[in-house]
Length: 87
Image (cartoon, rainbow, N blue to C red):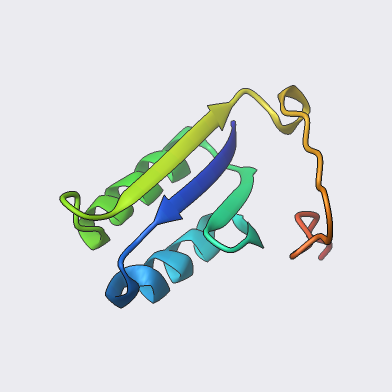
């Protein structure tokens, strides 16, 4: 599945959330990550996020799509980070 994760996290937890998401997805813009993930990776990431965030204050939105092809992406202005990863 293809995931887009956006978040609004209080400052003390931002670095932990960003580090966690970088293990699973690609950073594309401030507070936005996206990329392919398996069901098990999605479950693990979600569990880890819940352990970090304060559900009374923080907000994380995860958009799940069948594939990257099912999302149309348009960038206006500069591309903050490359979403393509070449090894």
